[in-house]
Amino acid sequence: MSKFIVLKADDIENHLSWDEQVLFGALIDKMRVCREAEGKTSPNRYCVINRDEPYISEITDIMKKHGHWEGTE
Image (cartoon, rainbow, N blue to C red; front, top):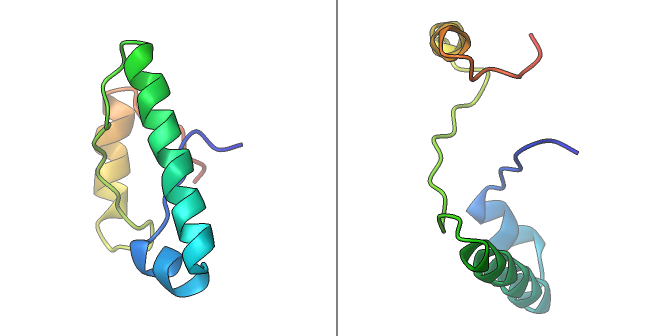
């Protein structure tokens, strides 16, 4: 499994039924509660950049420089 999973909110709304969206929200809430019980920050905040952007090589170079790039080229 990947370290991170990014889902577009529109895709959740457009492709999941109301019941599935409620279940999905409950699962996310459970993870938040568990993380808080472990003393971890909740919610985490991330920056998401599509890899097809023209500036992606600059971003990945910066991330590599700081030891934060685990992606495949």
